[in-house]
Structure formats: structure tokens, C-alpha cells
Amino acid sequence: MFDKTAVVTGGSGFLGSHLCDRLLEEGIKVICIDNLLTGNIKNTEHLFGNENFSFIKHDVTNYIHVPGKVDYILHFASPASPIDYLKLPIQTLKVGSLGTHKVLGLAKDKGARVLIASTSEVYGDPAIHPQKEDYWGNVNPIGPRGVYDEAKRFQEAITMAYHRYHGLETRIVRIFNTYGPRMRLNDGRALPAFVSQALNGQDITVFGDGSQTRSFCYVSDLIDGIFKLLMSGETDPVNIGNPAEITIKQFAEEVIKITGSKSKIVYKELPEDDPKVRQPDITKAKTTLGWEPKVDRSEGLRITIDYFKRQF
Ligand code: UDP
Image (tube, rainbow, N blue to C red; front, top):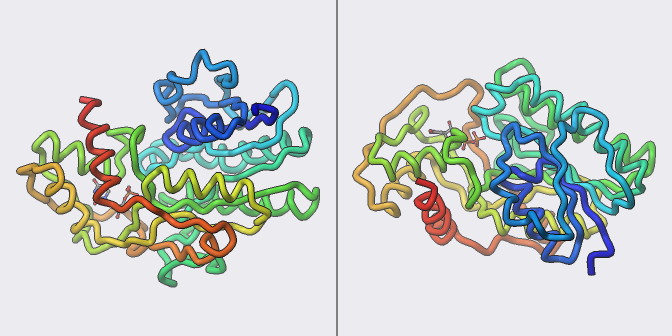
């Protein structure tokens, strides 16, 4: 137990903090690095005082110094919600490009295995549905979302280059929409927006006509898939997400029903380049990792809504 060490960048964010918890549960020491730009120290506060956990406040776009042996590096630092990366376009591009370069350099120096958090956004507004890993995507490089999408596409490219050129042990997870406790209520994503609006009796803001689809994965399922990928031998990108697809309008109605809210749906302008459909094909995760999601949306939503209620 605790003879291996993992570095988690973005470890105080929504996904990063759940990863820190899981790695510690697996008997792996954790060094969490976060500049707290969009992360929240509260997400990892319960780990302070744990002798197998340490925290470094650092921006990983600058040289990363970590003393001692490192076995695994999980790169989860990045603004990840559309309003965050529209507000922080340069930081988003830098952490995906310069930050990934520093992370790969650290992995090479330490001889560590590195897992990179990529995204379904590499598929852009997809022309293939559901999305399989061999689809190259449909991204507008100069649109407002391009700062995130292209940073993540560059991130995948440089990761594969380090793998091919330096023989680095790399893993790439393409993460689809995920929800659960520790999401920020004000991060602008559909789920926290709808839940906080429903709980406050405000209008639910559906963008466009709400016919666009997403497929939402509960956080514990996602973390389980990522851990299995880290421990596997798969070096090509793997989709991790829940294929249960729903329109955004239906999703808003579901949140209203579960919260018992009297809120009404109002329609707002659809953001530029908003993908019209999104659903992971998880055949590869099933066959190579033996993974599939277990928590259905009604159960996951109930847990998440309870968490949000405690935040008010
Ligand atoms: N959306 C919405 N109302 C909101 C926030 C988001 O209708 O208050 C829509 C958004 O336009 C998109 C979908 O919900 O079509 C999911 O958006 P989110 O920001 O959660 O993430 P995305 O999947 O676009 O990265």
C-alpha cells in the first residue's frame, strides 16, 4: 500500500478531486497540483491532514517541479465549462498546449505513465452519430469554442508524439458530459444551471429550441472508467461516457420533475457552434477495459440535487 505516487493536475477541480479520492482509496499516494483558477480548494479540503496526500498551488503552464519518485500523472487541469473557457480563452489554450508539454516533460523525466484528459469536444459538432474514437471530428478552429477544442486536439497530438518519439507510456480519455457532486453551481453548464434555477423557482434557460442532445454520465462511473484505462495497456484514445442520450428540453423537464419545482422553461439564443448531438460509442471501453456505466440518470440526478441543496 502507498508504494506508488500519482500527480493529479487540476486535482482540486470537479473531476480531479474525485480522482484524488479514488487513487487514495486504491492505496496510491497523491500529489495534487492546482492553481485554483476554476478549481476549488474545498473539493480537496477533506484530504488535508492525510499523510498520503499533498497539495501544490501551481500553474502547470510553467515548469513543474515535483520531488521524488512519480509513477502516474493525470492531467486534468483546464477550464472545462463553456462559460469558463469563453471567459478564459488564453488560459484554456495555454493549459492544453504549454501545460500538456510540461506534464509530458515531467512524465519523461520521472519515467511515469501519463493519462491525459481529453474530451468529446474533439469531435466538435459531429457529423457521425454516435461518436466513435476513429471519427476525426468537425471543429471550427476559429469559433469561440475553438480555444478549448483545438487545445484538446493539440493535447492529443503532442501526447501521441511523446508516445511515438520518446516511447512514453500514455493514455488518453475522451470524456463526455459528466455530472455529480462538486460541480460548481455557477459553472454555466446545463445541469447546474437547471438545478439551481429549479431550486430557486427561476425560469429554466434552455438554449435554442432544446432539440440538441447530450448524454450525461454520473461522476463515479466516469472515474471508474478512467482508473481502469490508467491501469490498462491501451494507448489510443478511449471514449468514457454514458450513452443514455436526451434532448436538452427533456432534460430540463426531468430536472423540474425531480426537484418538484414550479419553474417554467424559457428559450434563449443558442450559443455559437453548440454541438447539435452528442453520444459516446463505448464499444471500445466495454471490450478493452470491461467498463460500462452503472448509475442511471434518475439516481445520479437525485444524489447531485441533494448535494446542490446543501450548497445554498
Ligand atoms: N444549455 C442550456 N441552458 C443552459 C446551459 C446550457 O440550454 O443554461 C445547453 C447548451 O447550449 C448545450 C447543452 O445545454 O446545448 C449542454 O451544455 P453544457 O454547457 O452543459 O455543456 P456542453 O455539452 O455544451 O459542453
